[in-house]
Image (tube, rainbow, N blue to C red; front, side, top):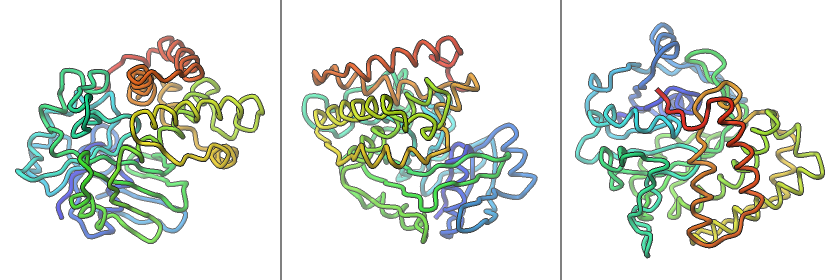
Length: 329
């Protein structure tokens, strides 16, 4: 299988390494220091708690040199979607699926959704319908990854999580294309599951991300620094409950265990990527992770006082840092 990873950040590099281990022919679209390092090293270095390996990949900043792929995985952050739309086009053959392994609500969320909201567009996440027009929801796969990882150097990714998990699924609910990609990625310490309801997986992770992201952006710290504070833990419970109510109102209730999440977070020293982006003044996945859930709550008439308060505070901090409303280059 010939697979291109669009975006050589931590998640993109990790998935490239996993695909190589699974026997795929892998290329990555990268830029800057990452592109230079991957070319110089001849590949990507992946370090997990279980092992370290080198994954030889083709690295380029010009997708037109690669030609159509058997599959594409997009691992950029939401603010970059508009900028990469044109670059995705030459990678697409007649049947090429495109898996979007990203945080928050995806641009294709209402594709094949059913009901009154079927086909609704999300300009907060896909301005000008760039993804809807270039890729199209018929190619899209949803991807939800549970892995704490960082780039320790250009072209080198360190994974903190001992056993990582990825869920893949179709907007329409099928699993055949998702399973074909999952089969190449699976490993003894990487569980990859093709699911019939990828939206439920999106909401379950979003409940975690809302808690770690919003409180992390306000404290500029990891969950271990705040979740042990009784007042914060209670606020986390309320926030998780509100997010769960939105998910249920959207027709995808989760089995999210807030107490288990709080207990786990008290040992989590890894700062969320959105916290790192805010701290560095980079574009944030603000709308995909925070704005869209608020929009959905209003669509369904769900009261979210805790979510509204925290999003308002984080937005104020993000605007001051120049990270809100900034498009990735």
